[in-house]
Length: 414
Image (tube, rainbow, N blue to C red):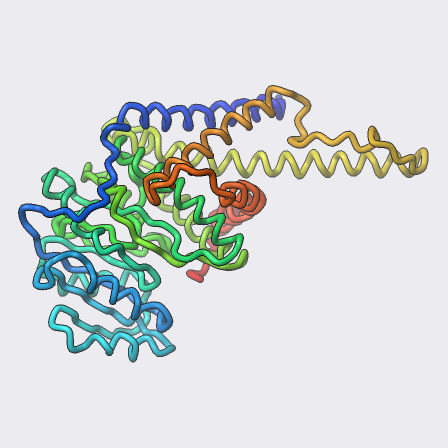
């Protein structure tokens, strides 16, 4: 028995609509809890925090990264900064040596072993109760750390707090498309926080209680996504992860299609394989919405995009083949009807309505995420860049990640 492609399509559309409505309901239930603090804040106590900056060939950006840490609105005697050169082959070591005279900064140099090994070296030398990392191509807002630490002060059960990561200084269409995507990420991360279902503790300035690593062990390779693997491990052990929506970290993003493809291939490959590693948590009620919502949603999204892309390619090929046969049989007679285009290659008006319905939710997520990040409600053309560019490119890294997983081929870091 062969399933009708339209049935599969509607099933996938149903799940997509369900996810977006679920996010929207979560938003309306918790919207009063979403607070953006525009002024400086104070907390009762300022716990000591260690922040590790792993560096591999980051000569061009690491100086600005460290300066942003030194400019944090946080007591300098409570802030320890570890700069770790993970076997760089450029001038990174010389760049970080400019900070060797700072009393709260320590420098380390090691053979290249990957980002997770640099973070673990930092953990080994950490004596504070709080620990975090910062990618050497990212820059922190001066108020970001104190806002994150206010979550720990308010909730002793919080074991990690993630910031809002936004795009730094986009210069072309690819980066502006990512800017809209990251705005959507701010919204989605906050909704997942309300659901207790965050699946990534991003490298840029997620702060942990050191107890997490004391109890669960250090970072692991995690298929080159160590920030995802530690979140999975925390969720499996019921360790609470929060999201501080008004703690902003600005990150440099890929500026070319090739670099974007490699980054997203690594991310999707990491999601697929970390989910395989932690498959025993799937659909288990005791692991909460992480197991019942986040992971299934991610799996369905990958399958949906891959299937729909394959269906469109198949239908397009079938359409072109039929026209070739027609031309060979009766010759070329060009009319508007001879093309008969159908944007979704599905002969139904309701399909178009449902897709537009889903995109309206996506646009809302981007706009509200921008409101949280920039305080602006206005519509940005970056939304169009995102919808067009990612609609075209995303199926390729999804399919390649599935292919690599089947053949056990590990994607490169960059």
